[in-house]
Length: 105
Image (cartoon, rainbow, N blue to C red; front, side, top):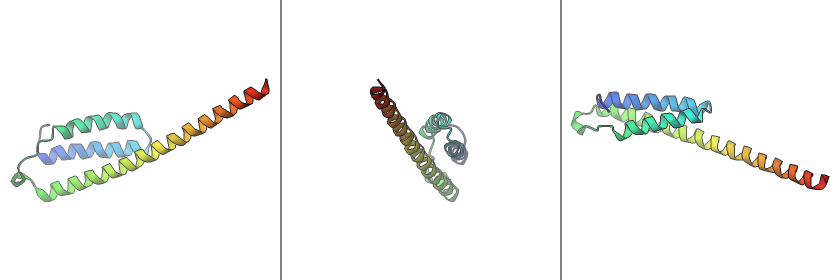
């Protein structure tokens, strides 16, 4: 990843903000694609010596990233739970149809 650490973190933050919006609107496939892109950027993030960092700005950016990740994870868990409930309801419906079909003969 090229650019200053601040620019690199801004890029990662921008992707994280987009991921949050995707999670809020249930666009899970897009979120996964963005997560892969962001993970690649994080892996290539060049951390300079601490003396070369604007520590206050970096601290703020890292805290923002942590908060965004918390929100994204929470929304993903909610989505996972909703999908689990929907699948359980489908299974229950299928069982009811099967039972009806057995007794209707």
